[in-house]
Picture 1 (cartoon, rainbow, N blue to C red):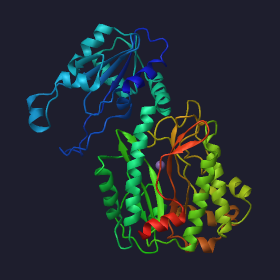
Picture 2: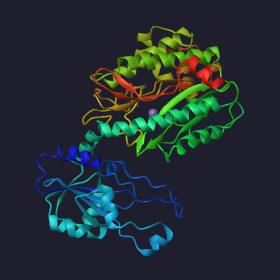
Picture 3: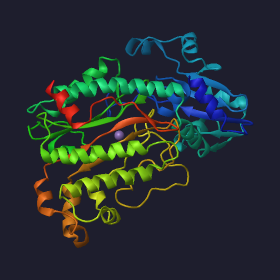
Picture 4: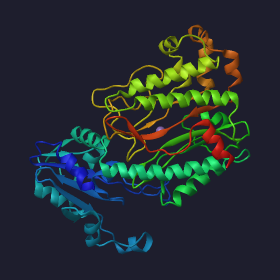
Length: 444
Ligand SMILES: [Mn+2]
């Protein structure tokens, strides 16, 4: 399968005469100056092109002959004593199927034999490493990141299957969490349930720092403390996923700790759900992500208007950036070997310098086989509202007294993972999100 990824990359380098691609695989990382090892996880570009998920490898791609050279670390007996069994070259050959297999110590001599004109690298750090071994070539760090990013942003069928499997198991874990949450538990107990269900299905790596947030913590976009006790009137927000074969899942659900949404919670929740459903209805190839984002923000503003939390016409609330006070992040992002996957901004496309759009992680026209998250949200963030109350132009649109009463409310986010198709999308997330469905699963 990774052979297909390399072919895709070769096709982007038309003139590969006397040129090589070099990639350095990941190394084991330690906690400060100790021998505490973090679990190894391959660097995503290396994994994409090789399928190798173990430390200390290198690769060269011969663009002229379209041949793949893999360099494996030579391990000594001490390695076997302390770290693990040493694989033979034959094992590596069978597992990874390179056109040529070498030991890492052979990297300088192989480079010399090639005598390349140009070596394409991912970054300056790799250039510096390689220059120590061979400095008779021109190094280029522009073309390769662009080419791999292009390849990775349009998924192959095999990649889509990995993503579907990650989502299938993540759906099981999210349902289990929804069933088990009760007031009085601590946030970390919920995380334990979530981790358990992923791990017992063989998923060992979290795709990102999961968020398990109750009450006002749910309005902290990247809350990772996971230490608070859940109160019966709290909303609980879980934004978490594991990866399968390196491919991520990333879902969010928000539900009432005691199993039934209060009127206010239901009002905000329904506004976010309506926004997500409207945006999904518009999702298909040819649509621009920033347009979808603005569409979702309008629906949320209408919801807040209906709840008497904001005043004015939706057009005005959008023009004056009132929406950004309640929805300060982007609608979604690409998903793949990284949770915030590459390719959101094609070359030359800059971020929009405007509140509420600045943090949009994708500004592209959607194409079939792009995979992304759709995750509108609505939050009560005192840090954003306090200054807005002081700003005359903004304050006239805000129901200050009602909003102040909600400073402990937190927020709502609903996130699904989808594959863009020509006519629409495939939703890989299978976790209840309608209010009645959520309440029913929580009742058991
Ligand atoms: Mn996400």
